[in-house]
Image 1: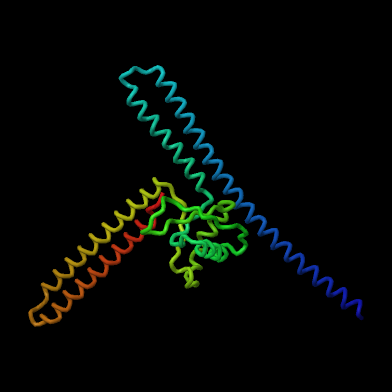
Image 2 (image 1 turned 45 degrees about the vertical axis):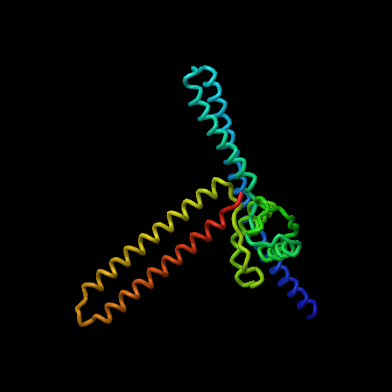
Length: 256
């Protein structure tokens, strides 16, 4: 009787192990797919880099056969291509980085950053070095650059940044991508366009609201005044929110 129980338990344990093994195999497939996607992205960046180098070589060969009148124009094209190559290199160097905004420039701040990284990546075993971006500035805390092992870790850290809202001790810190100066400028421009669009939309809604109020009967004068006040309050709220969003984005992106 005991032997039957033991055999039954062994069969159950084997089924549990087989189930866990299947789960591990499925997880292995998912990880492999992510690794393949990352390698594909790296290969694409490598091909882009080679193509840019080849373009520079072709333009340089054409430059040797061109006349003095075209030298200035070709040199401008070369400079643009060189800058494109450098920009791609800068992007590759930042591919596995994240940036922490608002970390105090002290030893305590670095320890705080390490604790934050454990929230983003519980299995993270790295150390935080004082790798600040930009020159020292007494008016603002410089961003802190963190280098991760691979792109998968970087994406996981960024996607986990929402967990910080559950930790009051990190409420002054935000997590961002490590952007080049060109990417920062593009984000600033997008922020300005967004703010202008919101402002124009709010102004149009206010004008439409005031027009509707002015068309109401005289008997509802008090309601009309109240409606106008509400429209004005709504406009001020929208404008204030837009300005705050824009200011936050511009401050967030303003580093080297």
